Length: 133
Image (cartoon, rainbow, N blue to C red):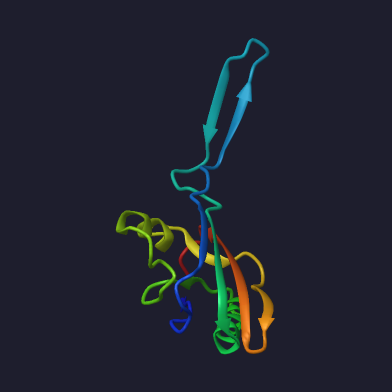
């Protein structure tokens, strides 16, 4: 597992969705519904972090983390970082994703230069349920 860069400040925006339980719903013509659930764990939780006006060096550390994590299909942790700061302890538990789900990048970070040496960065993560190696 790889820790998200500790040099990056607290995100200026954060969006989280806890995901859903894998299930299929069948509905009869008379409206009766039957649900088949395929597991007890949520899947597809998402976390999007926005960092405004950070240095290019901090933006580069996020890009470096993305490359390091995806080169070996690793997971990202947020322990020891500022990513979960600004949220209450009860909400931080979800951002850390203490369930069997593991955070992975859902796509490459997006970097926008706003001034020489200053950038905005957006990172998106999806929580995956992987079997232990």
